[in-house]
Image (cartoon, rainbow, N blue to C red; front, side, top):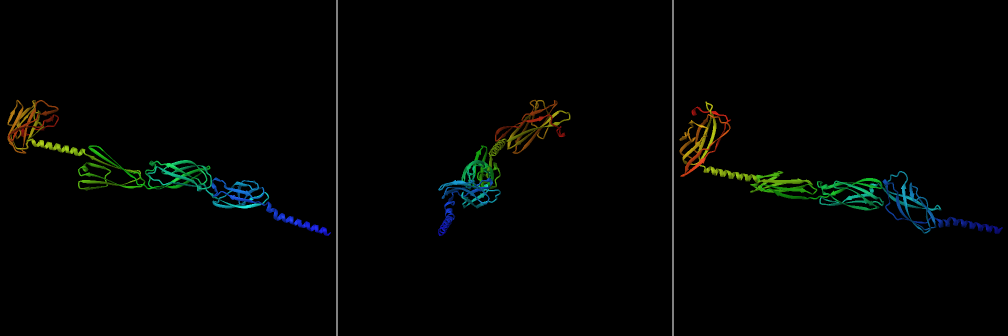
Length: 474
């Protein structure tokens, strides 16, 4: 009996020891024992693309062979789904993908817990975080500064996140250029584009800041961004001059604003007091100042970018040339006239007589420029005409009907003295049309020398109106 009791006590002690081993020792032998390292960083979830956040994990099994699975309690799906085998001492690289289930409007950094569970039911707790953003926040765009002398400009497009967008098409639009470019844009990659500029596209634009619009197509999604570009100030004014012409000379001065700021310019030209009389300007100068014999013309103008100020100065030397010729002609005529000591001028007028005959009154004006002596003036009348026997104040000294000649004699004529010699001729035969009378001749002496002169030829037209012969001439 005692022996039986001792055996029962010994069995109970063994049972208690086995139970204690099962409770405290065996769990420590078979419990999940993993080393978990996250090798990625800056994980991001692009809301517009509905793509999961991806975490790179390095898991080492420090215990026995096992099958593990991933799960969470906050409403996210996780991949890989189901169990993942991992042998004792094995290190396995796993891409853990996390996506929200249903509506998830949260933006910004998000932290949550997840669990790794062993096949025996044991598990470990881990914590991860990701950033959820809109697609437009994943890009940075920019343009380098440039000015009117720049031939090119740099544009860059940068992926700010640890996300592979793959092939991206970007359209850049601005007042200066338009460009469409397709590029590969991996995680945290920056792509720089060198763009050639056409200066004609922006030659009239002012310096300052302008907007550049960018349309990005990636992963079958399209977003629109904008940024500013700086058109740096540059003051560039070019000047060109051109002269042409001989008697009419023209000077063209052009000032072109090839910069991008409104520029004040001053253009000065000078002329002497003679040439200025024959010079025209287009446009008219803003200021005219005379210093001695030189006249200064000034144009103060503001020129907008891309604009040209053209000043045309035309000097017509033909005018003074003609004036000089005219003066020379006048001088020569005056000189010649001064040499004509006796001036004869002849004119005719129609007269009307009672018998209806055709009649003309002929007048010869004799004017002495200087003192002359022994003056004889001779005039002739046409063969078809007859001489009327009545004369003016100065009666002829001799009349020759056969030679149709009249002659007046004067002992002398004083300087400036004028004698009017007039007579009337008529014809029974009607005259139609234009009729010419011969010139009168003058013979005189001056300083002991004999000189001759002639008058002009007188003409008449038969259609002219006639006038009655004064009673005293009838």
